[in-house]
Length: 157
Image 1 (cartoon, rainbow, N blue to C red):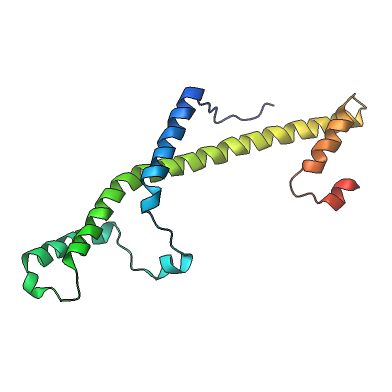
Image 2: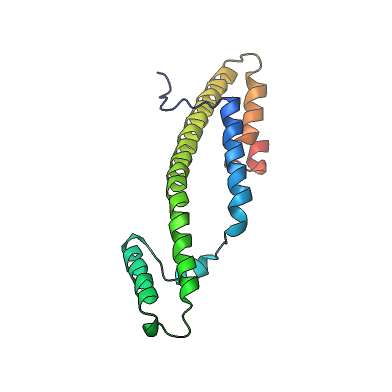
């Protein structure tokens, strides 16, 4: 029985360099302008989502067309800057989020297949060791020391 293979992912060196360059551009151009919130801050903030975008945009229009109704403590220019920021960032965020989700799934699946292959080999070496096949015990001992979840105390036994 062979191992089920659902993915065979390979990037060329030139594609990898081009992608790394694009990521570096994002880091250089975008990251310095972004902020990081604490989990508490993130939880406490009122959220603007798909359902509130129309409300926020219409409110900004009314603020601009009816300045007499705008309270003195509301800076309509900064309100407009925030709305523009959301519009610009959503254009970037949505495709990056899709890429990030797919990237995460691909790493998960590739890692799972690699781990399964390692387990198959590890079990095969264990059987080979029981049959006194040359190098099997050395390989088994080395891998068993690295086996996830094993503590040094258990690995020495």
